[in-house]
Length: 133
Image (cartoon, rainbow, N blue to C red):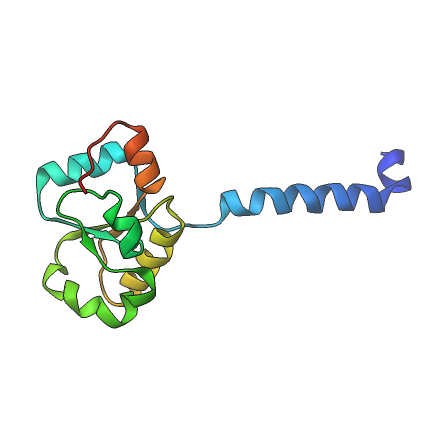
């Protein structure tokens, strides 16, 4: 106890830096689904695949039947997804970061059942799952 009192500033720095390291892990990132969960959703039907990567990335390989709307265009093109409001929308990007932002935009636009592919297309391909060009 004496050490803590004598070195309160060092202890405070250690606690704050530890908290700063944990903060990203504790921050909510929206709904996510693993590649296995997405596969199960696809097998059940009533799922829309939305790829928010740029067209060049999309052309290098994507999930079958995925619709490509780049994240930068999503706000202006969200109307293209209106007919699928009652369906589950799985958002895909390269690693998962852009998809999480797209899920937030979709939820703000009224798409309640939107989720992102955890790990993106990289995780999908690492699992040995098929893509098309």
